[in-house]
Length: 458
Ligand SMILES: *Cc1c(COP(=O)(O)O)cnc(C)c1O
Image 1 (cartoon, rainbow, N blue to C red):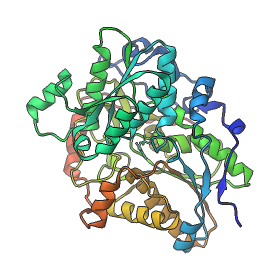
Image 2 (image 1 turned 45 degrees about the vertical axis):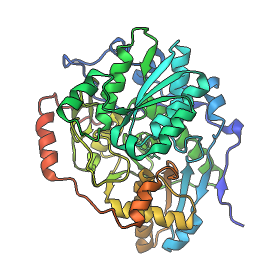
Image 3 (image 1 turned 180 degrees about the horizontal axis):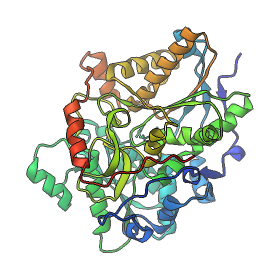
Image 4 (image 1 turned 60 degrees about the vertical axis):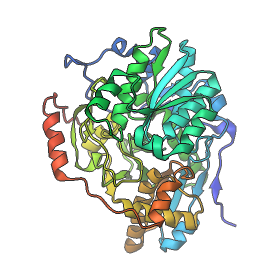
C-alpha cells in the first residue's frame, strides 16, 4: 500500500515561527497624521508582547512552551497525498495537502488564536474582543480563551449571526459571549444602524465595534484580537508551512506549485511563506493565493493605503483593497469576504513573487464536490477556492504531461457550513462578477490617502 499520510512526531514540531519581515521591505502602517505608527500607539488595542512581534524583523521567533502545550492537542497536522483526486482528474501531478481541519474548531485559525490568547494572558489581560464573519474566527478565539481562562466577546456579522446558528453554539460552549454586529453597544454600531437599519453587516463594521469595545473598557484589562491580515497572525500560521516542509523532506518531495485560499491572507501565508523564503533565495516555485471573483481584492483592486475597518479606526495599511466601505455581494455564499489583504501578501503580489488567482463561485463548489467524493472530506467554502485552483493546475499538468508536485492548504472542514452546500445542491447558487464601477468608486475613495511605494525587496 502506498503511503497516504505523512506524520511528524510531537518531538518534531517546529519550535520557531518564520517572520517574513526579515526578508522583505515594507511600506509602514500610517497613523491619522500620515506618519508611521509607533508601537505605543497600538498599546490600547494589543498587548505589548504581540506589538513587539508585529514590528519585529527577527527571522525566527521562539514558540513558547505554553503555546506548544495547547497546539499539541491536534498538531503536528497530517500531510496527505490526494491519490483519489489525482486519479479522478487523470493527472500526472502529485497532489499533497496540509490538513488543518483536525483542530477543535475545524480550521487553521486556532494556530494564531492560541498564541494570541497566551500572550494576552502573559501580559495580564483578562478579556479579549473580536469580530467574526461566518464564525470560524470567533469560535477559534473562544476555544483558545477557554484554554487560558480568558473572557471572550465576539461581534458577529449580522447576516451570519442569523444564518449560522451552530458557530454561535460552539462559541457559547467554549464560554464566549457572541452578539450580532452592528450592535447598539458601540458608537460605531449605533452610527451604522442609524444610517442603515437593515444592513447585513460586514467584517469592516464588526472590526470597528470590537476595537471600540476594547479601547473604551475602563479596567484597562481588555484587548482586541484580529484573526488575519496582521504580521504576527501570518507568522503564527507559518507552523503549517514549516511542518509541511519537514513532512515533504521525509518523502524526498518538494512542491513546484503552492496554493492557498486567501481572505485576509493568513492560512495562505502560513503554508506559503516558508516556501516564499526559498523562492526569494532562488527556488523556482509558482505560488498562488486564491480569492472569489465576487470579492477580487488581489486580482482587481488597487495596491493602496486603506483602513482595515469601516469606521477608519485602524492605521492605514498598504494593501490591495476594495475600499473600507465594501459590503459583500449578497449572492455570494462562501467566505473570503474581507475588503483588504494582508500587507505582506499584498507587497509580495506587487513585487511579482506571488501570482494571485480568482475563481467564480460555481467552480469552487464543483471542486468541493469532487474532493468530497474522492478524498472524502467536505471542505469549508473558503477552502473550495484553493481546490478550484488545484483542479485547474492538475488539469494543466495533464495537458502538459508534467509530473508536478502541487501542495495546497486544506484550511478547514465544511461541516458547519452545510447551508451553503444545501444551496449549491438545490441549484440556488450562481456566479457573480464584481462590478467594475464599484472598483472605480473605491479607487476614488482611496485617492484621499498617501500612495504606497512600489518596493523591490531585492
Ligand atoms: C477564515 C478562513 C479562511 C480565510 O482566512 P485567511 O486569514 O485568509 O486564512 C480560509 N479558510 C477557512 C477554513 C477559514 O476558516
